[in-house]
Amino acid sequence: MREKVTGARRWVVKIGSALLTGDGRGLDRAAMSVWVEQLAALRASGAELVLVSSGAVAAGMSRLGWTERPKTTHDMQAAAAIGQMGLVQAWESSFQQHGLSTAQVLLTHDDLSDRKRYLNARSTLRALLDLNVIPVINENDTVVTDEIRFGDNDTLGALVTNLVEADLLVILTDRDGLYTADPRNNPQAQLVSEAMADDSSLDVMAGGSAGALGRGGMQTKLRAARLAARSGAATVIVGGRIERVVSRLHQGEELGTLLLPERGMLAARKQWLAGHLQTRGRLLLDDGAVKALATGRHSLLPVGVTAVEGGFRRGEMVVCIAPDGREVARGLVNYAAQDAARIAGKPTESIARILGYIDDPELVHKDNLVLI
Ligand SMILES: Nc1ncnc2c1ncn2[C@@H]1O[C@H](COP(=O)(O)OP(=O)(O)O)[C@@H](O)[C@H]1O
Ligand SMILES: N[C@@H](CCC(=O)OP(=O)(O)O)C(=O)O
Image 1 (cartoon, rainbow, N blue to C red):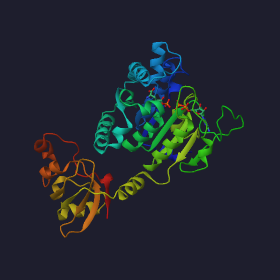
Image 2 (image 1 turned 30 degrees about the vertical axis):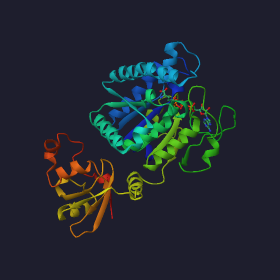
Image 3 (image 1 turned 120 degrees about the vertical axis):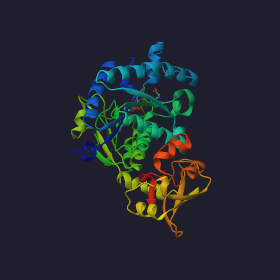
Image 4 (image 1 turned 90 degrees about the vertical axis):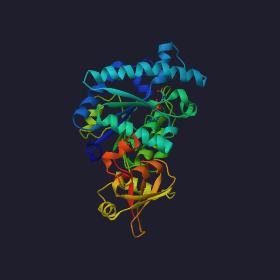
C-alpha cells in the first residue's frame, strides 16, 4: 500500500505525446476517454485534479498530414497551435460526458519564474479548482522557442505541482515506469518500484534518450520528480496503457515507479522560504497580529498591520515587525507596497472597495510565512 498516493488530496497528472497520439497516429480519443473515466472517478472521490497534457505538436502534425517532426521552430509552433485546438476539444468533450468542465491554461517556464505571474497563475488555478473545473495545461508553444526545441512537459508538470502545492505528480508514459536501463535496448532491465527522488544512482538508469515522439525521455521525468520533491510532492512514473492505471494507483496498487520527497510539503516550503534571504520591505504589526502569527495557525490580515515600509511588489519577501521592534516572521506578501499601505489597518471586507479589486483576503498567507 502506498500511503503517499492513496492519501494524496491534490493530483497533477501529466500525459506525454507518445501516449496521447497512439505513437503519432493522431489523437487517441479512445485512450483519452478511458483515462477521463478514471480521472472523473478520482475527482468524484474528493481528490482535486490538474491535467498537464502534451500532444499539441503531434496532433497538429497529424492534422496537417506531416509524418516527421518539422525542422523549423515556426513550423513546430504552427503545428502546436493547430493541434492544441483538437487537443482541448477532445479533453473537454470527454470530461463533459462525466458532467465535468475543463479550462485551457497555457503557461511558459518564464511565467512561473516571475513572482507576480506565478502568483497570478496560482490564484487562477486555485479558483478553477474551487469551481470544480479540471484545468488542462500545456506549454504556450506560440511564444517560446527553446522549450519547444529542447523543453518538455515533464518539467512543466513539476512546476505546476509546485505551483498548486499538489501532493502527487503522476507522469503517464509509454513504459511501465523507470527501468534500471532503457528497456528499448536492454531486455534485462528491471522496473524500479520505489526510490527517493534525490537518489543519485537513478541518474545512470535514466540516461537513455526519448522515444520518437516524446522528447524528454526518463531524464526529464526524473528531473521533474526532483523538482516536485522540492515542494514535498511524490511522483509516480507509470505506464499510461496499463489497464485502469489511475484507479489502481488510487487504490494503492504498486504500479510504476514511486519517487519520494525527503521532506513533507509544508516543511519543504518553509525551508525554501527561510532560505530566501532577500527581503524587500517591512510590515509593522500590532499586538493582536503578533499573537495570531505566534500560534502558527493564522495568516496575516491587513487589519493587524499599522505601517508599511519599502517598495516591494506582490509576491516578494517582507519582514514582519512587532511593536517592540522584534522581527517575528518573514513571508511572501500578496499586495504591492502601495496597495498594502492603503489596506493596512482595514478589515478584509473592505479590500475590494478600497483597491477596486481583491487578489487574496490575507496580506501574507500562513503557508507563505516562516516564524522567527
Ligand atoms: N531507464 C529507462 N526506463 C524506461 N524508459 C526509458 C529509460 N531510459 C530511456 N527511456 C525511454 O524514455 C521513453 C519515454 O520518454 P518520452 O519518449 O519522452 O515519453 P513522453 O512522451 O511520455 O514524455 C521510453 O519510451 C523509453 O524508451
Ligand atoms: N507542448 C508541446 C510539446 C510537449 C511534449 O512533447 O512533451 P512530452 O511528450 O511530454 O515529452 C506539445 O503539446 O506538443
